Image 1 (cartoon, protein in one colour):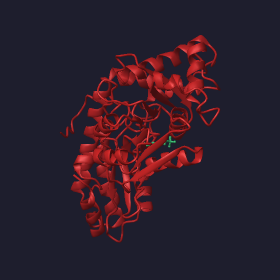
Image 2 (cartoon, rainbow, N blue to C red):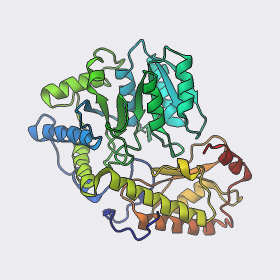
Image 3 (tube, rainbow, N blue to C red):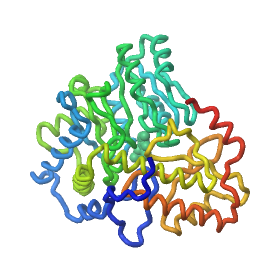
Image 4 (cartoon, protein in one colour):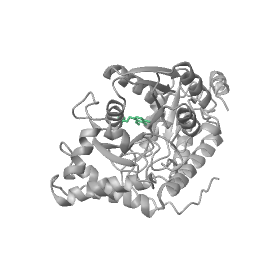
Length: 398
Ligand SMILES: Cc1ncc(COP(=O)(O)O)c(C=O)c1O
C-alpha cells in the first residue's frame, strides 16, 4: 500500500548541498551516522573492543538466532571481500557447489569459485529470471556430488527478489547445504534462523543497516565454522581465523575500520529505534511503491512484474524516444540533487533507482518530479520503452 504521507520513517535530513544517493549502497546515511566518525578509536582499546562485541551481538539478534547456533564474524573490506571469505572458508576443498546465477552478483560468485579453485556447476537463468525450487531440485537429483548451493537473496543487478525459501526447502530436503549472499537485503528483508534453514549469510555495513562502507559480516552456523580450520585459500579472508582471534581477544586480526564500526553502531541504534527489520521493510516498500507508481504515471515501465520486484532497487527500461540519452538524464537528475544508477542488463537498455538509505516517500515523490522535469528538458515526449522491452518482460515467469 502506498502511503505518500508517511511520517513514521524518521529519516534525518541530509547535510545541505549533499545529493540524495538513489543507489543500493553506498547510500544516503543519517547525519548522526556521519557524525559518529568524528572521533578516533584505538583498535586495541577496551572501548573499541566492546563496540565490536556489541555489533556482533546485535547482528545475531537481528537474525533471531534464538537457539544460539550461529556466530557473527565481521571482516574488513567491501561486500565482494566478505562473499569471497564465506566461500573460501566454508566450502571444503573437496566440495562441489551449485551456483544459482541470475545477474552480476551470482556470476561473481561463480567467478570467485573458479579463481579459488573450488569445483562448481552453474544454473544461469539470464539477467533476471528467478532460480526456482524445481530447477535446484532437478540439478541436485542429477548430481549426487553437489554438497552446497549458493544463491543471491536480492540480485541487485536487476532488483529481483529470489525465492530463497523454496530454494532452502529443496536444498535441505536433498541433504545439501545453503549459503546466501544477502548483501543488499539483510536488515530489511525478513531472514531469520527460526524460519529459514541455511549455513551462512553475508551482508555489509553500507546496505540496509545504513552504515558506511568498510566491512562486511558473515552470520554462520557455529558447527560449520568449527570444521573450517585451514580451509581458506587466503590469509586475510579467513573467517575461521578472524573468529578465533575475536573470541580470544575481542580484536580484529588486522587493522579494523574503526570509524566505520563507530558509524555502524549508530546505524544499528537508528535501526532499532525506528522499529527494526519490519519497520525498515515497510519504509523501503513504501519508497518503492511511491517511486514505481510515480514513474509509471510518467510512462516509464519496470523490468520486473510486481511479484519479483524487491523493495531494494527497481530497474526501469530506458524510454524508446530518440531524445532520451541516459548520460544526459543522469546529469540532469544529479543537477537536481539525485544520484541514480545505470542499468546492468544485456538485452535492453535500462537504469536503476534504489529505495534504500535515509529516504522516505517524500524524497521518492521529489525523485519522480525531477524525472518528469528532466524528460521535459530533454524534449522526451514519451517514456514508453521500445517494444523489445515488452518481449523481455513477457519472458519473466509469474
Ligand atoms: C547482492 C550483492 N552481492 C555482492 C555485492 C558486492 O559488494 P561490493 O560492491 O561492496 O564489493 C553487492 C554490491 O552491491 C551486492 O548487491
